[in-house]
Image (cartoon, rainbow, N blue to C red):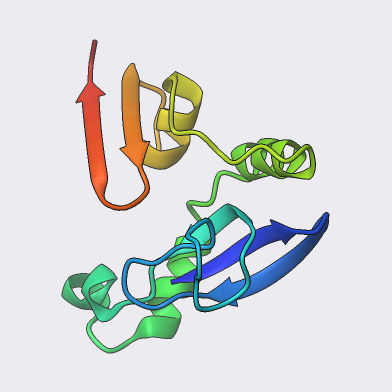
Length: 116
């Protein structure tokens, strides 16, 4: 994974192995509040892009919701980590505005509901 994080009030770019993230204790990389992440594991793009990771990343930029990233940046400056609760955050994660709710516990426990 590659992440854009807010660490000590400044933006930083970091990466983490496997399913790790910048909020985890003892993370390998820069610890901070993530405001944008891109999965660069081969499984994220292989079916469509095969070994063309640069093409995958170029297409990924087309779907970034910069309004949501900006909101998460403002929250991170105040020390608040992004939340996947509510339709706005769900829409940012899912790509369109539909009723959604997410409960995420970093450490791989997750629940989601769609179309309430």
